[in-house]
Length: 209
Ligand code: TMP
Image 1 (spheres, rainbow, N blue to C red):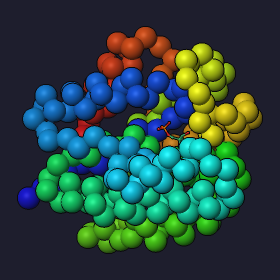
Image 2 (image 1 turned 180 degrees about the horizontal axis):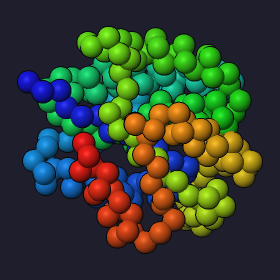
Image 3 (image 1 turned 180 degrees about the vertical axis):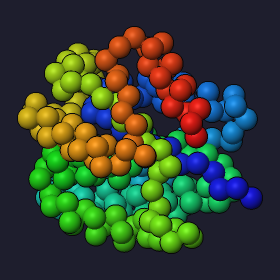
Image 4 (image 1 turned 135 degrees about the vertical axis):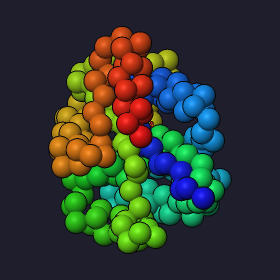
């Protein structure tokens, strides 16, 4: 049985990631893949409870990182790994790049600490490599545009969305730095343009899988 593919979507809050997620999943299904669509933090009953805490409760930044990775451990064990083993594809709205970008870049937690958690939680895959997404789509927009979209929404903002502009500048810079260092895996999608143009570039990217 061929192991499924693991695709993650990343970007600033307000980058338009969710708009493209459903389209991408539908596109993969139309190509005959069985696709599990999921998200982080969350994706399991316990993970969703942790998500509610993470998005609302003030906490120490290391507590925040530990809870993100606790939810991820549960998610990997109960949803992601079994799906990939069955040969299903997994499309996940955010994964470990978000921890490096938000807790590392945004909040300033040392990269080494995050790398230790990553190693612990993502372990060693069967081929001796740490489990990593096969492909990560980074939806990139200038911070100001992302902020305008978030502030224009008709709902209360969560604990991350309430952060100031400089926080998101650091998050974006860390995402772009990681993309620079993982060119094979992280594909930057310019998410400023028209939806059909963005979908066209997504089509070209997924064709390479
Ligand atoms: P969402 O808005 O994409 O659903 O994500 C919820 C928030 O959680 C978002 O502001 C980014 C944040 N987050 C982290 O800070 N670290 C992480 O590891 C993950 C997965 C999300």
